[in-house]
Length: 316
Image (cartoon, rainbow, N blue to C red; front, side, top):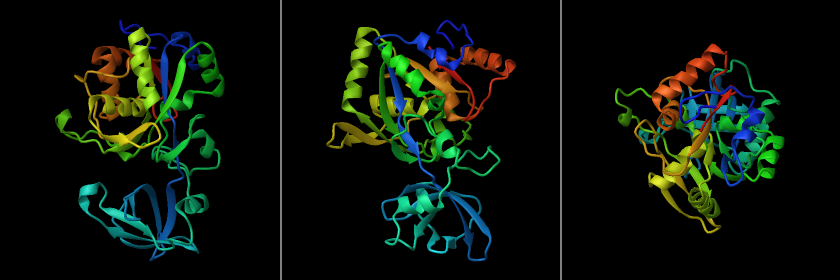
């Protein structure tokens, strides 16, 4: 726990219940990771390992893949695709189009051939356990290529205790894409460009945020992805519209770094992040550089774990 005055406490995660009270609002990102990693064979017989990012509106898929291969790919005897060059303005210049379209839906292809897209620093192949472990207990809306990892710490029991205490527990959706993890390489922070990600926020949640703030309660975001959905909407750094079912949907490419004035959230639960990462900049913007670095030094001294399956910090 990192308090506003800079003091640090070390507690077990289940004790988060002690830091939230009746009238506070806890906001979860209910996105669900899809088994978007596909391993196939090139025309030469060589192995190819890629991740489907999102459908581009034409039936083709943006992909993440090392190398520059273009051409046919086979994922099994009856699932084939073609990797081709695309307009370079849309991120990765390559797209993949399934040539077995019509025979199988994309959900059927992923069920047959897909694996969980674990972070690259996990040096092993995904297994069946990852289908559960790399997913929050409240995941509902399929669409992410990575888990909103701050939420992995929650259990059904902790969420139940929070609700019983009078904490409002609500969800929104931001489908996590590769932009969340791309390091900052520009010399000036404001030159870094985030890749837009899809979000959906219920109108009742927006009303809850306004009500809780008026009554003096805390708005606590679980993870930087939930934060960016909220701050992107409240700051107007998004494209959005109503979708007819009581929600606002759109996309945001908001990049939050020191100097940003938060408009929606008061507190943040987040994991420990690496240098030159956009999540670290967001946490720094909320906590302040000096306070956050003190907390990080303590975490390192005590052997806390970084990365996706690592430990968490509540910035109050």
